[in-house]
Length: 170
Image (cartoon, rainbow, N blue to C red; front, side):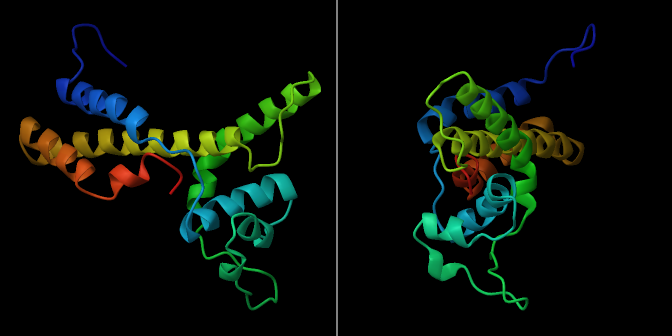
C-alpha cells in the first residue's frame, strides 16, 4: 500500500522488473523429479482422489518405484506436505473453475494432472518466491545499506537454486 507522500522503493521495483523479465523466459509449468511429484502428489491425491495415497501420482509420472511403504502398510510419499498446502488455494480455485467449465460444456479435464492445475501450482511457486525476495530485501535493508541489500538479494536469487525453484513446481 502506498501512503500519501510515500514513494515505492526503487529496489522493490527493480526486483519486480527482474522477475517480470525472467519469468516468461524461464517459466516451465511441469511436474518432474521425485521431490516435485512427492509435493504435488499430496495435493492432487487429497483433492481429486479424496485420500492421501500417492501411489497413483507416482505411477502417473513414471516413478512408482519411489513410492515406498510406510509402517502402516500404506504407500508413503517422500515429499513434505508444505508445498501442497501453499499451492492448495490456487489448485482449488482452478479445480472449481474447471468443474464450472465442464458444467458449461467446455472440454476441460478435472483430473489434477491437466495443464491448468500444473500452471496454477507453478505460478503460485513463482509468486511465493517473489514475496520471499521482497521480504528478504526488506529485512536486509535493516542490516546493511539499501543498495547493498538489493545487490545481495539479486545475487542470491540469480546465483542460487531459487532461480530454478521459482520458475516451476519444485
